[in-house]
Image (cartoon, rainbow, N blue to C red; front, side, top):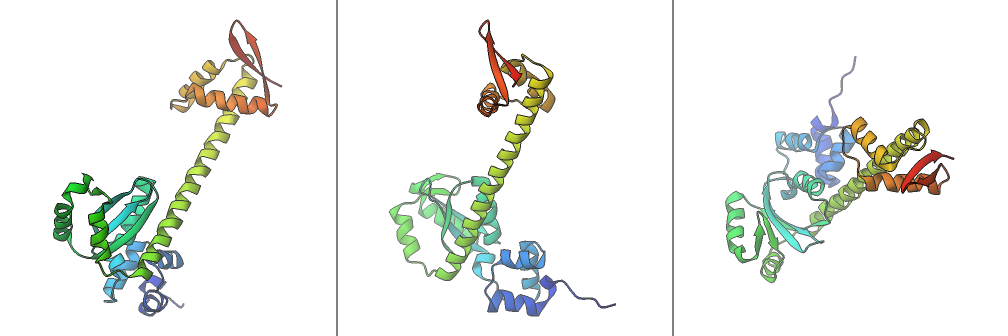
Length: 234
């Protein structure tokens, strides 16, 4: 019986993918079925030089929505940025990074103290912009990690959109069944029933939007008595 080692443990594959082809850590992880952190661990095991973007470095991450910049330190920047996208949900761009440690991060925070907003976030001031322009930047690596940021952000928005659609469809079915089982039910009664059944607060506004959708699509009809909107199947 033949036995082959996983790709991420294969030194030749790692060298070809990371050094020769310049694949990103995330592409290598996807192609080998491993976690990004696993790829980095095996690169270090074989003493393959790791790009600063995947090593300990100082980074400048711009929130384009708010014109704020995060000056931070990370030991695995490409992975850290992906986490920040999922937490922040804003349009982020890596504008600079360099080798460095936490002591240098602290010095930079002191240097730009007048621009500090909170934590590691600063106004993207002229002083910070001038500092970045004096840095020696690897434009190819910046473009590569920013492509990862864009892809991650888009994928996150798609997941949120799909989740929202699934929830909407689920609530439509629940409300349709309630109207079928309880002809003449009110929206307030639907809200109370859903909140109780799902153990989660469902607002009257959300119920109203779905009820209007069902009525506009000729699934249900409304009848008004004593100032109440009573709901029935068509």
